[in-house]
Image (cartoon, rainbow, N blue to C red; front, side, top):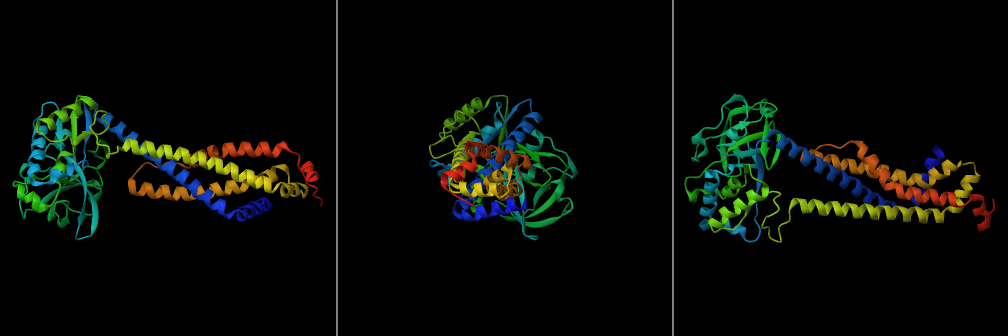
Length: 401
């Protein structure tokens, strides 16, 4: 075994350039495939959980498009149309509109960043949530008053860090202000936003405030109405029907259809806007092409190495190496290369999981991917190895010991 390992390492050193290229491409293939698979099963599980908990009606995520000149709606004269769209949605008998938007905020005293969820008045009515202690937001707390402490409801994970009634300075998406803790969510409660369901333990709930005067929203320099309108809707209609209703509202207000239902097939999406589905489909296609290139490069690498080292393998055979050991030397360096690539890919994948909270995927994925990638080169090597008798090969080349 030791002599086989030494020969494998020697073979890798002889082909430095090709080895580094294969290592990079293999890492990209394994890491990219594992991340894509993790993303797919995470989205599928979140979607299944969402539908399982709210099967009586459909719940859709509202996406705001900023492309195609829609950013002009941040201008003062267009604010009224966005506010009117918000009013129509809230008064609708066809859909139940819920304001909810995820934004980070910084707790200045501890200099730490948290995930904040800004919610509308009816959020806790539509999505029933239990509190471990404290109270829910009150009606008047959704109206902005300068100098007034902003209430927050914290997830269960923050209960050891903060106390009920505690106040601290925070930099929110709107402005820097004092906030006070008025409640803690029960451990294991579910939070709903962007068409997904996740545990609420790590989140901090803020009231989606209303500014009484237009001038104050300008002073805050925020995209408040974009945040308020990019919420979720609960309805008995399909995605296509809901999207048609959105366009009817937008058209009646003489404004572009900048709010779309995620996944609806009848969206009026400008050419520059690319959906997440299209991005993931492109990435999937690129990974398939990359894997095909990888297999071809492995075949080329093995073919070139075997053609160049036939006499060398013959000598190893005559020096006492068994047929299995000679075959191990031929493919062993490739196996070592794939092991190194899998370790690097696993490192990249773990970083991805930490930063995205995606589902983890076991080592079985690496093993299966390696076997699939090696299948064609393995068959090619076996066929080439058994095609010619090694003793005969030495005689043909006129090599003598």
